[in-house]
Image (cartoon, rainbow, N blue to C red; front, side):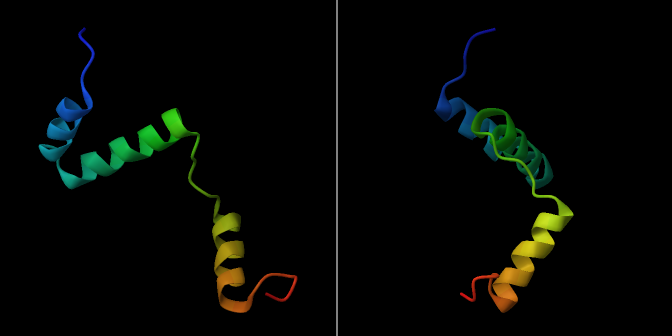
Length: 58
């Protein structure tokens, strides 16, 4: 299989349904950039800190 260029990948993404594009971006984030979705506990902590500040009083 021949390697695709960035331009070819962008064109392919433009032809995808939005749901498929989101799935692809999630896979790329995890596989190539080391990102992962936060756990429910992490989301709760971030929401709490955003609303009330962190433990250091910021």
